[in-house]
Length: 160
Image 1 (spheres, one colour):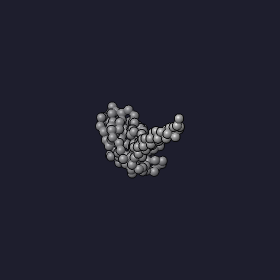
Image 2: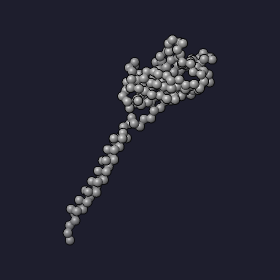
Image 3: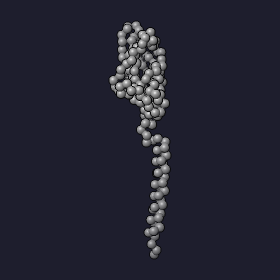
């Protein structure tokens, strides 16, 4: 009776060789599509306290954030200062002169353009596709009562 060990070994290598080749092609395709890049898994998010919402927001490579802010508080308000930073401590930049403060009636929205900063006063310059996560601060005064308030929110946005 002839020995079929060599034929059996060749069939084994050929079968598993094709399987390894298919796995390598699938992994290569997944790598090219960015499945293994954690930055591609992050979704843009903007979370503000009750009374405010982010309708649209974009961060440009030069660190400029364009934020369309909607207010749904019970009274009209004046935005007196705002800021964006990657840290949890926000230094709000007052709007001067006072006549330039942003007036928002109930249910209105306004697009604010502000610079986002990393640590200290370093402008957040990022490459397209990179993700910026940080804190947004908004100082406002209710028009009817004159009471000042500060609202803080979180933002995570890919640079466009």
